[in-house]
Image 1 (spheres, rainbow, N blue to C red):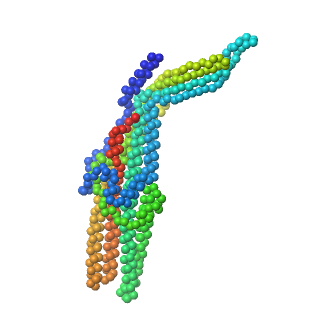
Image 2: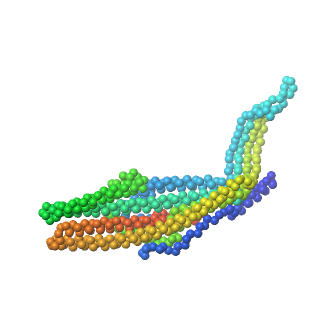
Image 3: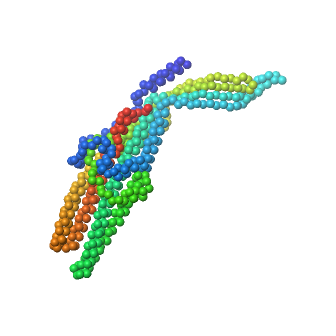
Length: 490
């Protein structure tokens, strides 16, 4: 007994000294070095983490703020992602449970009659052989513990924790995408409403010109060809209005679904024409290295590398011996025939050591497969980082281009407005005819429509930039929590 206790104590000491897992695999991946952006605008602004977390507030639009708040509370994709986080957290508990002993309560009892249990009893004709009925009952506790000598169970727990962290990053990625979708659809809707208003005014001008040409044709001042051309132009202009209206309704329906509501719920609230936000957020001052901590998809890819590395270490641990300690103890009673019952406390102590000798290459093949998964995860991490760089660079280019185009079209609109005012002054003095005045007004509306499109594109480009930078969640809290907890088993 003392010898067994000594063996158990020795194995416990080995377990406690097993802080350094010999089969552990590094999860470090070298990424391309980038010091700065190639297409960063020349006017970035210093922003706090709060500004990056709630970037949509930079538009200073209360309705947009309300829509995003409702989407964060009720969006179905976000709720599904939260449920996956809860599921992954329970899988961590399951994986970590293998690090501890399992203790079970057992009990059994019954009546039995066996031919091998024959006893002799005095009888009328001497000793008689009988097979008595026996009543037996037992119960107690049984414990089993696999000593993690080479860290396989620890690494499996680390893989589960990394995968759980990955579901949290996936949740944040859904949130970042949701915020961008809501803001983009809302801004495009406001831009379309502005364009619909301009298109309606454009149609009114074309109708007035047609009316004037018809009147001139009656008096011989215009030809039938002039009237026919104007009718064709009017019909063409009118045909664009249903397309704009349909697109606006589609955006409204999409916003309803993003907010977790029936598509038509927002029609009344968003049908009122409102201008695009006057204010827009500034371009944040972030470096390429900041994407590693800010973008959820990059953080998710890193957790996949960590999980794959831990799984590889756990697979390698299968090559080494496994030690299992077991113990059970309880109470047992046996009553045979009319004899006095026997009752006794019982216990068993045991240990087992197993080591693979031949398995037709199964363990080695599994290690090779898991090693290939680690390579895939590492390559995916590198690819995701390159895609993130591309995403940001494209967003910078789109923002710069849309900003320049808006400025040019704003200047063009001012020139067209000035030309219209000059033509109106000349018309009042009788120098210009009425048709020239209508053409000047039509030109102003055409340029105004293009400026509205450019202004919408500039606002949407800022949304795309913040989405590319991973804005829309608080990474300060997550970073502090990761630093305090780490990816280690409990």
